[in-house]
Amino acid sequence: MLFSKKSNLEAILNGLFKSYFERVPDVKKITNAMIKKGWVSSQEDIINDHIAFRTLGVPYLGIGSFEKIFLKYGYQKKEFYSFDTKKLNAYWYAPPKPNLPRIFISELRVNDLSKTAQQIVHKYTHSISQDPVDKLDLNKVSEVIDFFHEPLWELPTLENFDTLLNESEYAAWVIYNRYYLNHYTISVHELPEGFDSLEKFNEFLVNLGIKLNDAGGIIKTSRDGLLLQSSSVAEMIKADFSDHKTKEITGSYVEFAERKILPEFQNINQNKILSKHRRDGFETANADKIFESTFIKQTKKPL
Image (cartoon, rainbow, N blue to C red; front, side):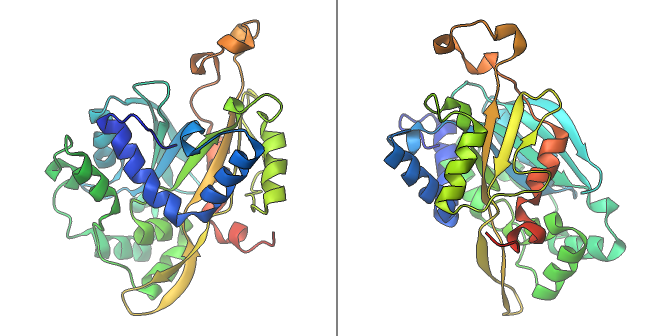
C-alpha cells in the first residue's frame, strides 16, 4: 500500500501500514511472491482496496471518535452495517482520491454484552473522560500516527481477556490490540490479466502456505455477485498481560477483494475501466464472515 509521493493523509496511511507490515509476516511473504511472479515491482504497486479498524462502543470512543481523523482528511461517510449476532455496528468511508483505500470502521455494542463483560470493558475504559481525538492536532502527521499505536487503556489481565474471549472474540481482540490496523486488502482485480480473479489468487495463496478463512466459504460473494472477498487467518502473536502471564492470541490478517465491473459498464474497453466502473461499498454477509479471520475456530484449524 505504501505511497512514494506523500500528502499528509498518505503519510498517515504509510505510518499505519509500516507497523502493520512488521506485525503481520504474511504481508511480506505475499508481496515478495507477487514481485517474484512479476505481478508488481514493489509494495507501492499493490492497490489497497480498504483498511479496517475495530473499536469499542463506550463514551468518548467508538466510531464517533475514530472517524474524525478520516473525515478531517476528506473521507466521506457512507453506508451503515449492523451485525446482530456479533453485536457490532459499522460504517465505510469513501476516500478523497481514487488511489487511496476505503476505510471500514466497526464498533462493539458494549451495552449488548453480559453485565460481566460490560464491567470488564468499562474497567479498562472508564478513565477516558473526553474524546482522545479532540486532543490531537490532526494537522500533525506524527501525532496522528502515534495515536494509532499508543495505548488508551492499560493492558488487561489474562483472566479478563479470557472472560471476554468466551463471550465476544471481537471484544477480546480490541481490549488487547486496541487501535492496531486490523487488516489491509489487496485489490486482486488490479493485477495483470490472467491473475486478476480471486479464485486464481487464492490458488496462489494456498501454494504459498497461507491459511485462508473458510467461514462462509473461502470466497465470500455478495448477493449481486459483484463483490468477492477472501482473507487469511490472523497471525498469532505472543501477548504479555498485566498480571505477568503470557498467551498466544490473534493479531491482524490480510484480505483480498475482487470488485467486478458494474453491468452498465460491461461494454467499456478494459483499458479504460476505472474504480468508479466497479462495484463499490461492502456487503454485510461478506463482512460478517471476514470478521472471523481472528476467531479461534479459524486459527486452530490445520493448514
